[in-house]
Image (spheres, rainbow, N blue to C red):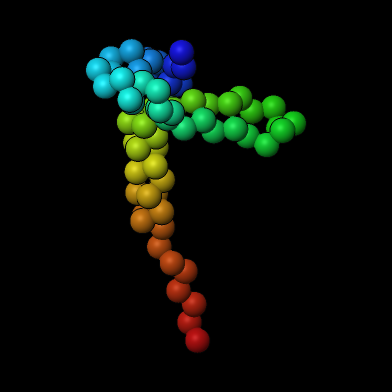
Length: 68
């Protein structure tokens, strides 16, 4: 059983489809070895929210305009 680090629940527990219970249910983010950062496990719903937040931040960045 894996627990999502953001929503703190096991997404497979509520799944009725037996095929989805066998498949990987999310994303595991592993930092580089020796960095001291913890490994994070995210369900697909939380990973979608994190990815959308990254996209929104990238869209807010304005390109640097340099005069000729």
